[in-house]
Length: 234
Image (cartoon, rainbow, N blue to C red; front, side, top):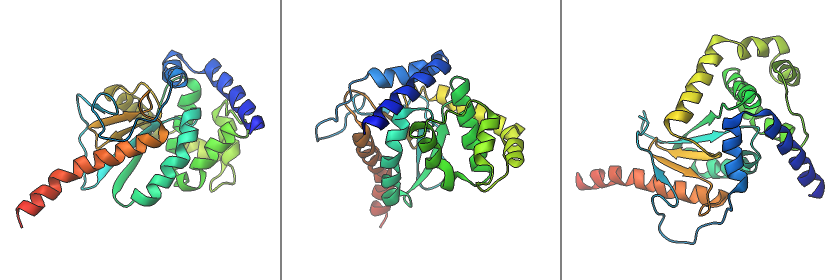
Protein backbone atom coordinates (compact mmCIF):
# COMPACT_ATOMS: atom_id res chain seq x y z
CA UNK A 1 0.00 0.00 0.00
CA UNK A 2 2.90 2.39 0.83
CA UNK A 3 4.42 1.78 -2.59
CA UNK A 4 1.08 2.42 -4.32
CA UNK A 5 0.52 5.63 -2.29
CA UNK A 6 3.96 6.93 -3.24
CA UNK A 7 3.34 6.15 -6.90
CA UNK A 8 -0.04 7.89 -6.81
CA UNK A 9 1.55 11.04 -5.39
CA UNK A 10 4.12 11.07 -8.19
CA UNK A 11 1.40 10.67 -10.80
CA UNK A 12 -0.70 13.43 -9.26
CA UNK A 13 2.25 15.84 -9.36
CA UNK A 14 2.85 15.00 -13.00
CA UNK A 15 -0.72 15.71 -13.99
CA UNK A 16 -0.81 18.93 -12.01
CA UNK A 17 2.18 20.08 -14.01
CA UNK A 18 0.54 19.33 -17.34
CA UNK A 19 -3.11 20.23 -17.13
CA UNK A 20 -4.42 23.75 -17.73
CA UNK A 21 -6.07 26.06 -15.25
CA UNK A 22 -9.47 24.53 -15.85
CA UNK A 23 -8.22 21.07 -14.98
CA UNK A 24 -6.45 22.38 -11.92
CA UNK A 25 -9.71 23.89 -10.73
CA UNK A 26 -11.45 20.56 -11.19
CA UNK A 27 -8.90 18.40 -9.42
CA UNK A 28 -7.71 20.97 -6.91
CA UNK A 29 -11.17 21.39 -5.48
CA UNK A 30 -11.62 17.64 -5.16
CA UNK A 31 -8.24 17.17 -3.50
CA UNK A 32 -8.74 19.92 -0.93
CA UNK A 33 -12.33 19.05 -0.04
CA UNK A 34 -12.84 17.17 3.23
CA UNK A 35 -15.06 14.26 2.26
CA UNK A 36 -17.35 12.89 4.96
CA UNK A 37 -20.32 10.66 4.22
CA UNK A 38 -23.57 12.31 5.19
CA UNK A 39 -25.62 10.76 7.99
CA UNK A 40 -28.52 8.49 7.13
CA UNK A 41 -31.79 10.19 6.30
CA UNK A 42 -33.43 12.12 3.54
CA UNK A 43 -31.17 13.59 0.90
CA UNK A 44 -31.48 17.34 0.62
CA UNK A 45 -31.27 19.48 -2.51
CA UNK A 46 -28.32 21.84 -2.31
CA UNK A 47 -26.58 19.65 0.25
CA UNK A 48 -26.42 16.17 -1.26
CA UNK A 49 -27.30 17.03 -4.86
CA UNK A 50 -28.07 20.00 -7.09
CA UNK A 51 -30.96 20.57 -9.47
CA UNK A 52 -29.61 21.58 -12.88
CA UNK A 53 -30.96 24.95 -14.01
CA UNK A 54 -31.19 23.98 -17.67
CA UNK A 55 -31.82 20.22 -17.68
CA UNK A 56 -30.64 18.08 -20.53
CA UNK A 57 -33.30 16.42 -22.67
CA UNK A 58 -33.25 12.64 -22.28
CA UNK A 59 -34.55 10.17 -24.84
CA UNK A 60 -35.72 6.65 -24.12
CA UNK A 61 -37.60 4.99 -21.28
CA UNK A 62 -34.66 4.31 -18.94
CA UNK A 63 -33.20 6.80 -16.49
CA UNK A 64 -29.90 8.10 -17.84
CA UNK A 65 -26.85 8.04 -15.58
CA UNK A 66 -24.01 10.15 -16.96
CA UNK A 67 -20.59 10.07 -15.31
CA UNK A 68 -18.21 12.97 -15.83
CA UNK A 69 -14.65 11.72 -15.40
CA UNK A 70 -11.07 11.65 -16.64
CA UNK A 71 -8.64 8.77 -16.77
CA UNK A 72 -6.09 11.21 -15.35
CA UNK A 73 -8.15 11.89 -12.21
CA UNK A 74 -7.11 9.87 -9.15
CA UNK A 75 -10.59 10.24 -7.62
CA UNK A 76 -12.18 8.85 -10.78
CA UNK A 77 -9.77 5.91 -10.61
CA UNK A 78 -10.83 5.20 -7.01
CA UNK A 79 -14.51 5.67 -7.83
CA UNK A 80 -14.53 3.45 -10.92
CA UNK A 81 -14.67 0.05 -9.08
CA UNK A 82 -17.55 1.33 -6.92
CA UNK A 83 -19.42 2.40 -10.03
CA UNK A 84 -18.72 -0.95 -11.70
CA UNK A 85 -20.15 -2.80 -8.70
CA UNK A 86 -23.19 -0.53 -8.73
CA UNK A 87 -23.74 -1.22 -12.44
CA UNK A 88 -23.65 -4.96 -11.79
CA UNK A 89 -26.91 -4.49 -9.90
CA UNK A 90 -28.46 -1.54 -11.72
CA UNK A 91 -27.08 -1.82 -15.25
CA UNK A 92 -30.30 -3.20 -16.74
CA UNK A 93 -32.39 -0.45 -15.13
CA UNK A 94 -30.48 2.57 -16.39
CA UNK A 95 -28.81 3.92 -19.49
CA UNK A 96 -25.17 4.44 -18.48
CA UNK A 97 -23.21 7.10 -20.38
CA UNK A 98 -19.74 8.47 -19.72
CA UNK A 99 -18.60 11.96 -20.62
CA UNK A 100 -14.85 12.58 -20.35
CA UNK A 101 -13.64 15.95 -19.09
CA UNK A 102 -11.64 17.90 -21.67
CA UNK A 103 -9.40 20.27 -19.68
CA UNK A 104 -5.73 20.68 -20.47
CA UNK A 105 -3.79 18.84 -23.15
CA UNK A 106 -3.13 15.64 -21.18
CA UNK A 107 -6.79 15.16 -20.27
CA UNK A 108 -7.82 16.01 -23.83
CA UNK A 109 -5.60 13.16 -25.09
CA UNK A 110 -7.26 10.81 -22.61
CA UNK A 111 -10.75 11.98 -23.58
CA UNK A 112 -9.81 11.41 -27.22
CA UNK A 113 -8.63 7.95 -26.23
CA UNK A 114 -11.98 7.20 -24.58
CA UNK A 115 -13.95 8.04 -27.72
CA UNK A 116 -11.51 6.11 -29.89
CA UNK A 117 -11.96 3.05 -27.65
CA UNK A 118 -15.72 3.52 -27.90
CA UNK A 119 -15.62 3.80 -31.70
CA UNK A 120 -13.42 0.69 -32.02
CA UNK A 121 -15.62 -1.28 -29.58
CA UNK A 122 -12.70 -1.72 -27.16
CA UNK A 123 -14.19 -0.01 -24.13
CA UNK A 124 -15.24 -3.13 -22.24
CA UNK A 125 -11.77 -4.66 -22.46
CA UNK A 126 -9.64 -1.56 -21.93
CA UNK A 127 -11.56 0.99 -19.82
CA UNK A 128 -10.30 -0.25 -16.44
CA UNK A 129 -6.90 -1.12 -17.88
CA UNK A 130 -6.28 2.52 -18.85
CA UNK A 131 -6.93 3.60 -15.26
CA UNK A 132 -4.55 0.90 -13.98
CA UNK A 133 -1.89 1.76 -16.57
CA UNK A 134 -1.85 5.39 -15.43
CA UNK A 135 -2.39 5.18 -11.68
CA UNK A 136 -0.72 1.88 -10.81
CA UNK A 137 1.93 1.46 -13.49
CA UNK A 138 2.84 5.13 -13.98
CA UNK A 139 2.35 5.24 -17.75
CA UNK A 140 1.43 8.88 -18.33
CA UNK A 141 0.68 8.71 -22.09
CA UNK A 142 2.27 11.98 -23.21
CA UNK A 143 1.29 11.71 -26.89
CA UNK A 144 -1.12 10.07 -29.31
CA UNK A 145 1.74 7.91 -30.58
CA UNK A 146 2.46 6.53 -27.09
CA UNK A 147 -1.21 5.71 -26.67
CA UNK A 148 -1.38 4.04 -30.09
CA UNK A 149 1.72 1.97 -29.27
CA UNK A 150 0.00 0.72 -26.10
CA UNK A 151 -3.15 -0.25 -28.01
CA UNK A 152 -1.27 -2.03 -30.79
CA UNK A 153 -2.29 -5.70 -30.62
CA UNK A 154 -5.09 -5.07 -28.11
CA UNK A 155 -7.97 -5.58 -30.54
CA UNK A 156 -6.61 -3.04 -33.00
CA UNK A 157 -3.41 -1.92 -34.70
CA UNK A 158 -1.34 1.19 -34.13
CA UNK A 159 -2.28 2.55 -37.55
CA UNK A 160 -5.99 1.84 -37.16
CA UNK A 161 -6.05 3.41 -33.71
CA UNK A 162 -4.38 6.63 -34.93
CA UNK A 163 -6.72 6.87 -37.92
CA UNK A 164 -9.78 6.79 -35.68
CA UNK A 165 -8.11 8.88 -32.96
CA UNK A 166 -7.46 11.74 -35.41
CA UNK A 167 -10.77 11.51 -37.27
CA UNK A 168 -13.28 14.35 -37.59
CA UNK A 169 -15.86 12.19 -35.79
CA UNK A 170 -13.71 11.99 -32.65
CA UNK A 171 -13.00 15.71 -32.77
CA UNK A 172 -16.74 16.38 -32.96
CA UNK A 173 -17.35 14.16 -29.92
CA UNK A 174 -14.64 15.99 -27.97
CA UNK A 175 -16.26 19.33 -28.75
CA UNK A 176 -19.66 17.99 -27.67
CA UNK A 177 -18.17 16.63 -24.43
CA UNK A 178 -16.59 19.97 -23.64
CA UNK A 179 -19.83 21.82 -24.38
CA UNK A 180 -21.79 19.45 -22.13
CA UNK A 181 -19.35 20.00 -19.25
CA UNK A 182 -19.91 23.74 -19.60
CA UNK A 183 -23.67 23.48 -20.08
CA UNK A 184 -24.17 21.40 -16.94
CA UNK A 185 -21.57 23.42 -15.00
CA UNK A 186 -19.42 20.48 -13.97
CA UNK A 187 -16.73 21.81 -11.61
CA UNK A 188 -15.55 18.64 -9.84
CA UNK A 189 -15.05 15.06 -10.96
CA UNK A 190 -16.17 12.39 -10.63
CA UNK A 191 -19.70 13.73 -10.92
CA UNK A 192 -22.90 12.00 -11.95
CA UNK A 193 -25.88 13.60 -13.67
CA UNK A 194 -29.15 11.72 -13.16
CA UNK A 195 -31.60 11.93 -16.06
CA UNK A 196 -30.17 15.25 -17.14
CA UNK A 197 -31.78 16.94 -14.10
CA UNK A 198 -29.71 16.30 -10.97
CA UNK A 199 -26.00 16.70 -10.31
CA UNK A 200 -24.30 14.52 -7.68
CA UNK A 201 -20.68 15.25 -6.79
CA UNK A 202 -18.19 14.53 -4.01
CA UNK A 203 -18.35 17.28 -1.39
CA UNK A 204 -18.20 17.75 2.39
CA UNK A 205 -21.49 15.90 2.83
CA UNK A 206 -21.15 13.20 0.18
CA UNK A 207 -18.34 10.67 -0.13
CA UNK A 208 -17.83 8.28 -3.07
CA UNK A 209 -20.08 5.53 -1.68
CA UNK A 210 -22.76 7.98 -0.64
CA UNK A 211 -22.74 9.43 -4.17
CA UNK A 212 -24.29 6.20 -5.43
CA UNK A 213 -26.83 6.16 -2.59
CA UNK A 214 -27.91 9.65 -3.64
CA UNK A 215 -28.11 8.41 -7.24
CA UNK A 216 -30.37 5.55 -6.08
CA UNK A 217 -32.59 8.06 -4.30
CA UNK A 218 -32.86 10.28 -7.38
CA UNK A 219 -33.60 7.31 -9.65
CA UNK A 220 -36.55 6.49 -7.39
CA UNK A 221 -37.65 10.11 -7.56
CA UNK A 222 -37.57 9.99 -11.34
CA UNK A 223 -39.37 6.66 -11.50
CA UNK A 224 -42.09 7.53 -9.00
CA UNK A 225 -44.26 9.77 -11.24
CA UNK A 226 -44.42 7.05 -13.89
CA UNK A 227 -45.47 4.45 -11.30
CA UNK A 228 -48.09 6.84 -9.88
CA UNK A 229 -49.65 7.44 -13.29
CA UNK A 230 -49.70 3.74 -14.05
CA UNK A 231 -51.39 2.85 -10.74
CA UNK A 232 -53.99 5.63 -11.02
CA UNK A 233 -55.03 4.42 -14.46
CA UNK A 234 -55.55 0.81 -13.38
